[in-house]
Image 1 (cartoon, rainbow, N blue to C red):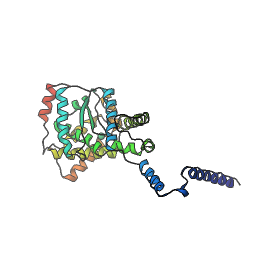
Image 2: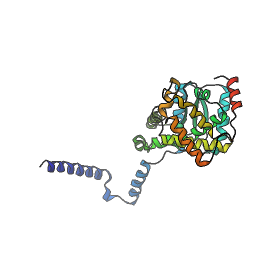
Image 3: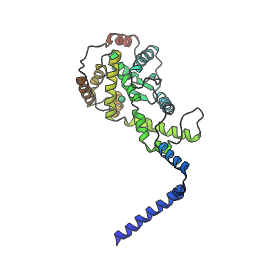
Image 4: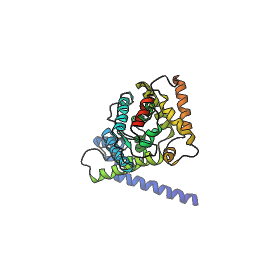
Length: 289
Ligand SMILES: [Zn+2]
């Protein structure tokens, strides 16, 4: 008896759902043009974010990162990260985007890439590095996140984008609806990048792409490996400066293990290409961070 009642309630809900959708679309009386429109709506509901929208979102996120941590205005270091970063771009999987590089004024060890080409490394990270090959590996890793659209993929999976995809977020004069959506998407991107971190698969892939593209430019691909290896002893008791880095990335030992497998496959060994250690060390001593 009880079962029958449940069934009736269930059927009632279904009937009601049909009646709502029939009222909304009146499927029987649609002409050919209307069918095209219905199809368009379905496609638009899951459309990928366009490049100018990605850049708009990235700019918002970059402004928030810069506002939160501050930007270090050291000419020598800014020049260094821009030189190394820009020569890496042609070797990346997305070379036609305009990339920008800046230093966050914090001792916390970290690096961030916002969609659309905005890349930040922290002062604390630059201090941790010991060669230009390591810097190249880190920057190439961040470029890879943007080229692989890692944050964007997370955002596009969200209900926020599914609901908001009909509202374009590019252009100079945004309506209040567009502003609202852009603000919410920036919040979600911040959450992915700064609070939760990306998936470990995305991090391993960016490590490999970073090593590969630094190698193409002529740097020792072991640069990024050496930097991550240096963090391994801190795994058990992360200090204040690496706490966020550790909570938003896979364990350093897991990353070096994955990289080692990749190097073995490639047949690469350390020390065969440029490391520019002396240059980096002299930059550190001449321009203390
Ligand atoms: Zn990463």
